[in-house]
Amino acid sequence: MANYFESMGACVPDNLIAGNTIPTLTASATIAAAQGKLVRGTVLAAGADGKLKQLSAESAGASETAYGILCDNVDATSEAVAEVYVSGQFNKNALLTKADYKLSVADIQALRNGGIYIENAMGEKED
Image 1 (cartoon, rainbow, N blue to C red):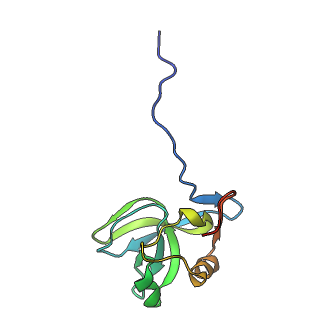
Image 2: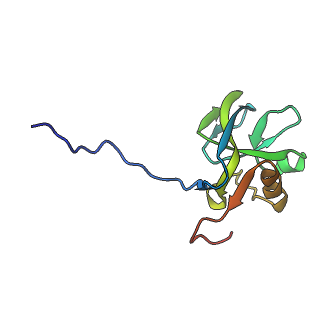
Image 3: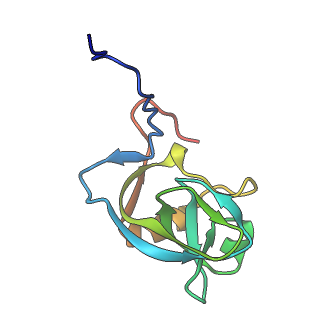
């Protein structure tokens, strides 16, 4: 008799997407080199050269603007092209920046101006 029920793996939600009222759109973008491995949910800032870097105190200080959210894990030890969310609703507590940095009001406003809405997921407390 055939085995009709077999565990093939598990799906563990990361709670990155907070809703679907706003269309979730992506675009291909160039990720700057020398950043190591970046993971899904990383907030990216656009530099003057158009390349994206992980949002950090130094990128915010260099007047780089929050641009989008990384869709998938990417190895950015060298320059890479990756899909980036440029529109949609996202859970603030699932977003990642460098360890030394927290999203500022200006960052959230820059993302909002680009079509990305940052929200707290139901039942989660504000940081």
